[in-house]
Amino acid sequence: MAKNVPARVCIGCLERKDKKELIRIVRVSEGIYEADVTGKKNGRGAYICKNAECLNLAFKKKGLERSFKESIPEEVVMKLKGEIESLG
Ligand SMILES: [Zn+2]
Image: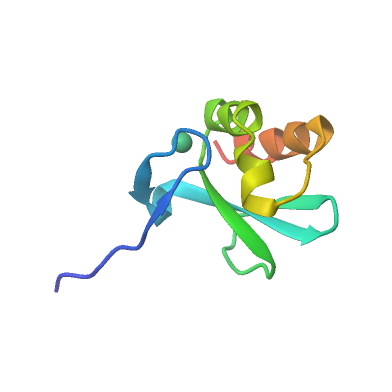
C-alpha cells in the first residue's frame, strides 16, 4: 500500500527530505530549544538533517532565527549540535 511520506525542508541545506531523515528542533520556551527525538514535543518546530553540518549552515544562514523569529545564541546551537551528534 502506497503511503504519502511527509516531506519537510531542512533549515540548513534547504533540501526537501523525508521527514524520517530529519530531526525536529522545538522551541520549548523562550530561548530554550531541544532536539525532539520523539517527535511529540509541543511547541514551534523546525526541521533539520541529522548532522552537525546542516546545523552550522542553519546558524550561518540564520535559518533558525527565521524559523523561530527570535535570535538564537551560539550556545543554544552548540547544545543542539551535541544532541544531534549523539543521535549518531
Ligand atoms: Zn540539511
